[in-house]
Length: 88
Image (cartoon, rainbow, N blue to C red; front, side, top):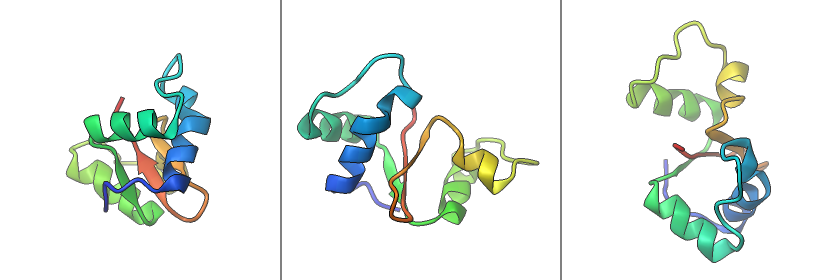
């Protein structure tokens, strides 16, 4: 789990931020990085780590399958096997 946001993570958030918010939060990579740092978003390396993150945060995942967890609005698929988790 990391809170470092590389170009792929920032672009993923910029392209998909409306899955979580009704309007754009950031217009540039710099704004996206500042926002993600402020809300302590994390980047994880696998679906299993997404599940572990939710469990550690006390979010009830019982009965939810991996696919259902990955479809949560807070979970952004970076596209390279990593996932960005943003708590809105």
